[in-house]
Length: 610
Image 1 (cartoon, rainbow, N blue to C red):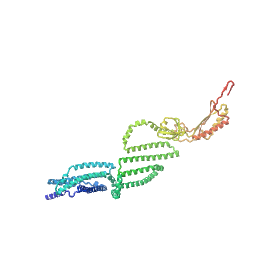
Image 2: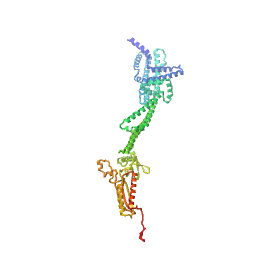
Image 3: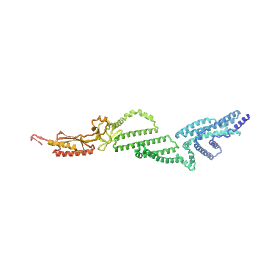
Image 4: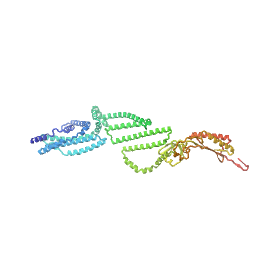
């Protein structure tokens, strides 16, 4: 047993470092690093070694990214080797073999450095799945700082004194080799961190391909000499051949998606229960908006690829704002198209639905659409909406006071719609202003005057002013006149003329009389019970009066008071003209003349008048 122990001690004491392997990559880097420390190398040879080292790092990058999950799951911590070395150190200490102890202590420190580098690389590979490159870079900074802190603790012991010890014994040579590897690993650690920062964007971009197992395809394309030469030129503007291929492919794919989207969108509208009747107009009015949306999506994808498959906060905010504006406008166009089609349909069908209800309603809806769009725009721009809305709540009283006229006009709009005092297209008169109602808006109602001017009257005014609506009549537009005949007219002639005029009006086809028929609308019993008459409700007048009215200064006046059947101005004027012509004929037939203002002078000396 004693001899076995001595043999075990001899073998491990002399050969503990004989077959040490950190990893193929680290072993290769150690070899290159040790070669560059040779004082006999020329500058050209050193440059070649540096180029070879950089190429090996790039190849290692591709190799790691191609088998990312394998590297993450490969937990190489050298614990078994470190445990064995600690046992050997204990044996060597008891045997008094100090060089062997130092040899294995250095080897353990080297293993700890390699272990720390592996942990750093594993953390970085996991961090590549971050949502954006900014988050990945923040994690890279965090993990690097933690690694460097651990690294400084591992390498705080200086072993350089053992590089210059004399002797050719195997244990001394092994000690010197381990010390050289120890310091080479420190340089490799620094190089690893440097290359991680140098290749951070490339790693983040390759990670996108690793999810689809396309890393090898990208590596194959990039390894072509012509592609590599082009990449060198394109890298100055942040591009590569692979990026250009992806960008062109995305443009083509999105173009076909655009065609597919149009087809699906059209099919949806055509088969939609609520929107099929508006499909044609919606497609025509939204085509340009959809084209702009497709262009923005293209630009967003190009920016995403250009930025190594990541999206910065600034770029994301910019495109989110654009999407918000486009979608808001798209919804606005769709809703207003539906409203416009309905307004045209109601106008053709003479629907009982008031056009101004739809007009005002769509303006309210548009207000909320743009309000929501504005709030989303502020949100994507980074504004704290909670603080903003809280501030609006605190300043609400001041805003309400400052906007009291606007609020008054808004409630005036509601009062107009609720009271049914007038509608768009009605001829109204208010506060001496007269014209046709063009539009009932949220704030003002516009009138087109008969001299072709446009008047905007605040809706709040209508709540406290008298409104005369000439269109709120269905039958009967008044004709009123006073006919003056001379005082020397005979009583019988005047009496006969009054009877003739009354009969003429009674028989006139365009004058409303008690015998004129009119179909009233159907009303609920409770509502009609509160009315004086249906005629007054709907604006039906059939009064006809012809009487001797007064003895004026220069004439005996006959009152004529009647209503035309038509309420249209031109037709009313034609009817009135015809009535006046017939009155003239009746006066002529009864030997009556129109009186005019005159003055008689009486001369007392002569007893006559002049």
